[in-house]
Length: 392
Image (cartoon, rainbow, N blue to C red; front, side, top):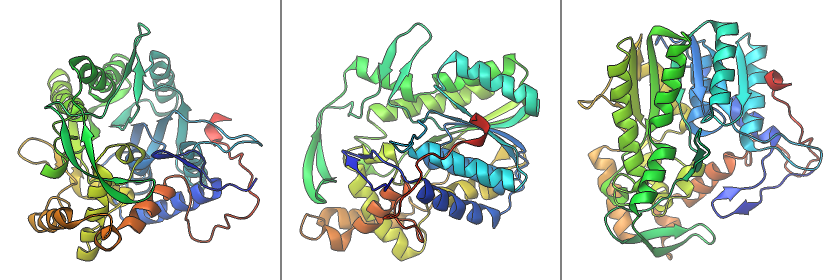
C-alpha cells in the first residue's frame, strides 16, 4: 500500500508506519543523550500514544531507565487500511525498548473505564508490583462514565462572544473568527472530560489496589498561554477544565500524603488538540518563528526530557509559587511575548508566510502522523500492519 497524507479538518486520517518509526527513533536518540536522576523506575503513562504522552514515555524510559506501561486508545492496521498514528508510534516504541532491554507493555482501550483501570492494575501487580510515577496525559473529546452517560467537551469562551484573528488551515489565510460562549451544561461536560475527575479515579484505584509506591509522583499536563489566547483557552471552557485539573492536583496530595501530585504547564505546540482550537494555530506559528530565531524553540521530546532531567528531582519537583511545574518558561519570557504580540498586530493573509512559521507548523502537523520524516520513501509500497508486541 502506498500511504499518503489525507486531511479532514484539523486531523490527518492516514498515518505512515515507517515514518512514525523514524520519528520515534529520533526522539529516543534525543532522550538517550539527556540522562535523568529523578528516580522514576516504574512509570504508568495514561494516554501514551502521541504528543506529550508519547514523549513522556520515551523520556521516562530512555532518560530515566524506567519500565513503562502505556495506556492508548488506537486502531490497528489491516492489509486495506493503515493503523492510527498512535498505534504505529506505540509499536515502534515497544520495538526499540525491547531491543534495548527495557520493559514496555501497552494496554489498548478506554482509559476512562473501570475495565481498563482493572486491567492495568492487574498488569502492574503481575509485572512491576507497584509504580512510582503516573503521567496523566489524556486528550479525549468525550467520556462515557460508569452509568453510561456520555460527556462531550467544547472549545468555547465563557465570557460572551470573542472575536480575533485565526488562520484558516485550509488555505493558510488569516481571518477573523467569532467564538460563542459555552452554556453551563457545556462547561460542565468539558470539565467532566478534560478536568481532574478521572485522574483522581486512577489514583484512588491504584491506592486501593496497593499498586503505587509511597512517595510516588503523579503529573498531569496543562497550558496557560499569553493574553492573546486567554479568552478561548485559559478563560474558556477548556480553561475551566484545566482549573479543575489543577485543583485535583491539590486534592490528590491532600488525600494521599505519600503521593505528590503536580501540574506541568507546557509550551504551546502543534498537537491534534491544539490544531482544533481557534486562534491558537496562528499564535503557535508566530511563536515558532520567534523562538526559533531566538534559539529557544522546543518540541514535545525536548519538553518532556527537560521535565525528567531538570524539573523532577528524586520524588519532588521544581515549581512556581502556585506549585506548578513551568515548562512554558521559555515561551513566556517577556521579550518572546513582546515580539509575538508585535507580529500578531501586523499579521494578515498577505504577509503571514513572512511573519509566521507556516512551514514549521505544517511540518510538525504532518509529523504527528509519520509524514515528512527524513530518509522515508513515501512513494514506496508499505505494509500497513505493524503490531504492538505486547498486544499480540
